Amino acid sequence: MAGLIPQSFIDDLINRVDIVEVIDAHVPLKKTGRDYSACCPFHNEKTPSFTVSPVKQFYYCFGCGAHGTALTFLMEYGRMDFVEAVESLASQQGMEVPREQGAHTRQSNAGLYDLLEQATAYYCQQLKYNQIAIDYLKGRGLDGKTAAEYGLGYAPPGWNNLTPVLGKDRHDELLKSGMLTRGDNGDTHDRFRERIMFPIRDRRGRTIGFGGRILGQGSHAKYLNSPETPLFHKSRELYGLYEARKAVRKLESFYIVEGYIDVIAMAQNGMRNVVATMGTAITAEHLKKLFKIAPAIVFCFDGDRAGRDAAWRALGNTLPVMRDGRMVRFLFLPDGEDPDSMIRQHGRDVFERLTGEAQTLSEYFFAHLEAGINLSTPDGRAQLAKQAQPLLQKLPGGVFYDLMLDELSKRTELSVERLVEITTPVQQPTSRKPGSFIIRKEDPSVRHLITLLLQQPSLAQLAHNIGDLAGYNVPGAALLAELIDFLKDKSDIHPGVILEHWRNSEYGKHLAKLAQCPVELEEHRLEAEFKDSFRQLDKYDPLHPDQILEKIRQGHPITREEKNILRQPAPDQ
Image (cartoon, rainbow, N blue to C red; front, side):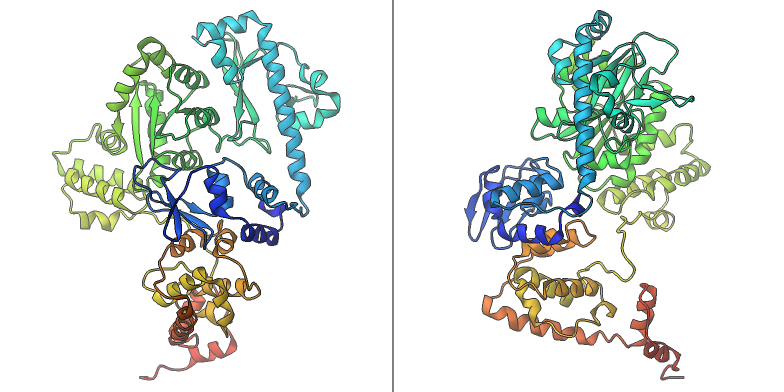
């Protein structure tokens, strides 16, 4: 989406808007010194830690780390996509959003959204006329109000119902949206027939696909979902997420169940924080999406063998996203029960009591691995260590990893030091380009220069001879060079433009943190401080052999002069 709108327009837009005005319209702000504050709208708190800077045009929460510009706020809090947020801010400023080539793709998708909304309306209408389908839903305990909220419908018998209703001229769109499918003989027909229809909605409530449950047993698949389309990707979408967020502004946790009816039945009984995958195992994309909204997840599985197998797969996919502060539990229902029957027969209180007794991720992890192992013998303890090793390697480093390692040490009677040798946490992927760097605390001069630029972007005009910066053997130098180059021809912008420009890059998070670093200098001292700090970079000699070797390791090409330096013998030879 971002590619459809020129970056220069986005930079200009962010430079014009007043972030205080934008956020205050949604979250009342209170002036505190130079900045404004409020209780964070992205997590529950009693003491305000959410700060909005009118100087930097940037917000930051010291509690949960949420940060961004006015554009980011509309996307995260207002649930807008990128283009919508840009259009909203532009409208407030009386600006017209220009379009680059590629805008036709969005217009084409807009046609698909409209088509699927019409299909939803058609299926809803058909449900009213089919008593068998109505009786089925009533038999599952669903009332009319809940069915209407979730847009439930019915696909009638027949191979060609949609095309006459939605338009013969939309045949290609019906194929593209997955509503039609092509047979072996080349003819096309409706994908869904004689099924209860469950619209799958995106975060804005637009229908992007369907799930269909067959009535009765039949010879066909019990559930059928839309295929992958330009709008629908089952590895990213979660059924019921839109309805959950619409019903509860601040969600503290999510239940993940396996069926559409499970979601709806639990919602009808007052549990609105329930979502389901769509015929696929939970993915890292699903979990990242949920953890952005709430810090806790409860996997809810049937207690049979299939349910426990699914739970173990879910645990494996959860480990890579288990950052500190996140909580995961595994709830196994009694034999013969599923979430739908459990909530209807026993009620919400019993369900929530069982949730309180559910296993934490660490408890389930070790209980599963230790099943059938005799830990009283060296062989058994060695077996546990061997089985745990590849799984713990999936965890990101942090307190949770350390605690899991401590627990494994107690159970295997191996020292933590020995376990560390065989079990190292994965590093979070950074998708770095060759030659790029991540800023570290041990690079004070570069960090300080970037912090000064975020405080006063016009300081970039004072930097000279930046061409060699990217070759310096110091983390952050490449970013500093990019930043100065970006600011050289921009004499009057505020820091929010910088943060928005790098929002989706590997540097975005680091810049956001540096933007919050206080600069205890009066404004007239900033120039002298920047010049002094910039001069300190001279100690990183790009022509020193060690720097040249590092340059090669980082993927930079080297010059003939640098090659000659490497050929020279060391001074002590």
